[in-house]
Amino acid sequence: MIENLKVSTWSNLDKGGQDKLLQRPISNNSDRRETVAGIIEKVRRDGDLALEELTEKFDPVAADTLVLEASDLLIAAKAVSPRLTRAIKDAGKRIRSFHAADMPVDREIETAPGIRCEVRYQPLSPVGLYIPGGSAPLVSTVLMLALPAKLAACSEIILCSPPGPNGRIADEILAAAYYAGVDRVFCVGGAQAIAAMAYGTESIPRCSKIFGPGNAWVTEAKLQVSQDPQGAAIDMPAGPSEVLVIADEHALTENGAEFIAWDLLSQAEHGPDSQVLLVTESRVLAEAVIEKLNTLLKQTSRADILSQSLQAARFIVVDNLDQALKISELYAPEHLIINTRNPRELAKQVRNAGSVFIGRWTPESLGDYCSGTNHVLPTYGWARSFGALGVGDFKRRMTLQEASRSGLQLIGPTAEVLAEVEGLDAHKMAVTSRLKIIDRAARK
Image 1 (cartoon, rainbow, N blue to C red):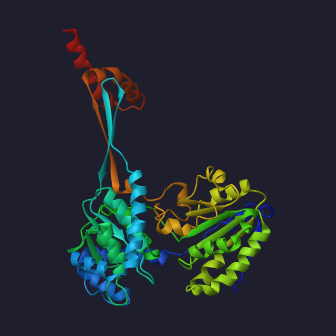
Image 2: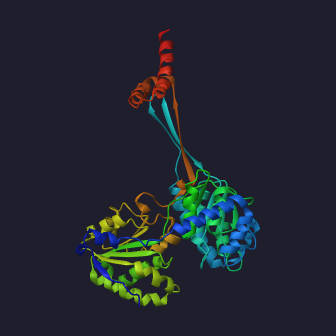
């Protein structure tokens, strides 16, 4: 039995109570920040030797080898079950198809006669992908990171993942890397892997950008290297996984309470600091979902994790769906599931969410694995300003412009006025000096 699962009525709370209800679990990271800084410095100083020492210190077993060969990936691809191979290829087909349709395209336009402006998208390289270890191999994350990188034409895609109990990266991860087109794989994890990809070692190339999820230590390392001009860019800020479900009384039909309970459990099982929320017009539904959670929890292999993460679960009863949407917009969830009578109408109004799952037949699990969208998403409220990972994240946007003599004559005076107002004399004279030459030539 999960304690402290209770239903709250939104309109009965004052502003302070409402804010508290939507507060995410808070983690004290002051000690972690200092420890990660030390790990980064050690890797920068000692390179591969530091990786070996830190792996022995932080991982259950030492890695058999730091550098994996292409043959290791092929062997792993042949070793996994045909069933998994088919699933990898099937999911990969849709992920590749969706992301190819979202490919940034170079463009060139004439903004005025004689003024040509261009935008070009250049692939980043090398790019570093981080795949966490833990109790299960995150095959899907390999696909979500490597396939967009391949579509972006990154010339070198490297992957780091920690050793498992046998001192090796799981065959399932290596097989996915093989099918997704990863170029090089290294058996190292944690903050030390992030540091290695950011600054380079004797074996691991310095990467221009680092992608992928991880625990609090990995997240802290990514933040630190991204704030260092000598470090590397990162995909997005990230925190614990989360889902918010909006449901109405329609969700009570056709086993709906069980569907919602599984949706909540599927996110809560990611870790003890994950958070799940149900926002509904129906108190009956909220109470039915809580009852289902207590029943279904016993059927899962991660009951210990769930018993912790569900302490931060929220069950909120609202007056109407407009109020439910306002709560979702305030929270800005990583995943938003809309399980209502007319879900698409509500989905049209959503602005702040990482990824939206529309209707009772769209579990969040499809987005995690095989619908085609990316499951690398902003969490902890960052969905207000960041979006889902895509091909464009693996490219650098560069603009170009070219003015002809007549084009400068046409728009140069505008630049002169704006530069004069801003008090930037040299900016103005860079235009004026050229216009004088053109004017002088025209009078001859």
